[in-house]
Length: 172
Image (cartoon, rainbow, N blue to C red):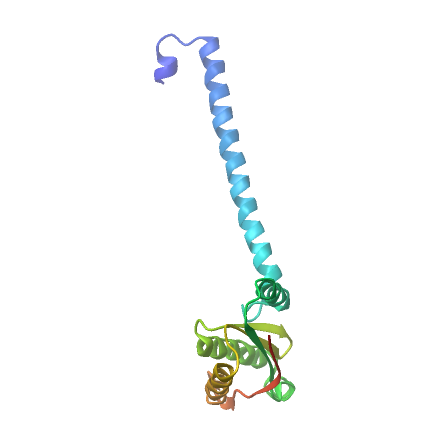
């Protein structure tokens, strides 16, 4: 109103339209850039995380191991396999099986605290990556995790206790 109030001319109206058009276009461009950035973040998360458990997936685990090896850091890897998981799916259904996997991920991750990371390798197989842990410290961590896992029941299914076997161990 102030711009056009003192004698509106065609030049002022055209200038106002150009200004408003530029402002709107700038807003639209910034909006699309931000929206694209959010989509990229979502795609990166989808590519590196298991959609069910939210844990890192095999690709993320391999990437992390590669970095640790390139940096010549000490680390240990523990392969974990859930015992009798197929029987749980068959007896209770896949929804309960999914809850079992999710709960296992939470219990194991809580047992690790900040001393390592759990990855879902595939199906009912998981992998623990334990940087800076080797020898006796590794054995202690293994016992802590097994104790924590074997005493945890699936919420809402007290008869379902988590059970896991250690399938292999690798230390560099």
